[in-house]
Amino acid sequence: EARVALGQGRDPGASNKSPAGKTFEQAARAWHENREGNLDEGHAKRLMTRLERDAFPVLGNRPLRSITSADVLAMVRAVEARGALDVSRRIKQHVSQIYRFAIPQGWADQDPAAYLSDLLKPKPRVRHMARVGLQELPALVRAIDSYDGEENPRRRAVTRAALLFTLLTWARTNETRLARWDEFEQLDGPEPLWRVPAARMKMEREHLVPLSRQVVSLLSDVRIYSTSGYVFGGDKLGQPISQNTMIYGCYRMGYRGRQTVHGFRGLASTWANEAECYRADWIEMALAHTDRDDVRSAYNSALYLSPRRRMLQEWADHVFGFLKQNGTLHVEGFERARTA
Image 1 (spheres, one colour):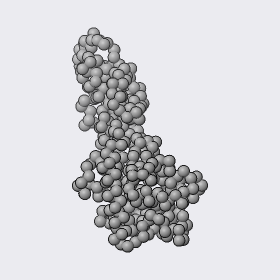
Image 2: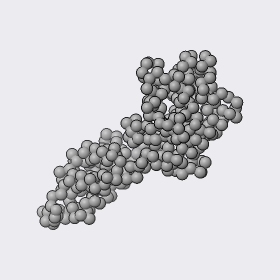
Image 3: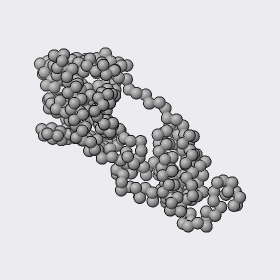
Image 4: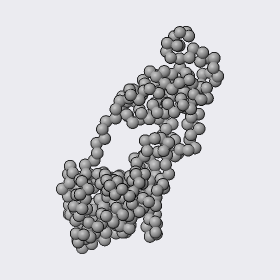
């Protein structure tokens, strides 16, 4: 038995060490409890859910010292098989973290996940959403401002407002279309804010968006078309605009295949990064991105709020500057729609 254990890379005297029989699940829950206080509540819950779904059914009842690299790899392969390549990397990372927590306490001798990184399936290349170059931003802004792709004046005005709001706030499509009036704070105050609930965010964390003067003005004017709690009301009473309203608006402006609504975020990010006066952390926070490191990703949603407010105001000034230069009518006010 000792020879077999040595051949498998295990300590033949492990059964005589204390505490004997510490299982993977016991160690994992102790590790999680030890760091839970430093994590965002939602993130801590997601972390444990991953372990309960993918790791515990395979490794949970196994003593820590009995688990081999092949065991961990088999678990990771099962996660990869369902196409969850990002989760497979995270679960492998969690196993290593649990063993690094266990080893100094005498519960294990080595990390069986330590040398698996090169065996993981590569993540597919990210497909970036179509967007025009930054040099074409002026033409895009003017196209939004003069949008006339729909016959109904109300629908035309709401689509135009939703497009501009998304461009100015760096929001994702669903964050805009499902925006509700009760999410906005201090619209008449010095520091207006949009508090997007965690349930609607891709990273499942509350996101705070400081609002520029132009966005506040736009919100004030779009209220005349609001028929429910949704800021951008759709054709059906009590419902928001549809998932396709804004992308079809881009098509009608002649940007099919060239510019998506999600691509607005890429334009804003490029502008901010090229400006070289905004820190990368501010930009990433404004985009509601998360750090790949699990510890750093548990951030405070209010972080960098003041510099982000300045950055988004300067972005709005930049965008509206194209309209002033061209002598065109601003979207704020909806004068054309009111006339119609």
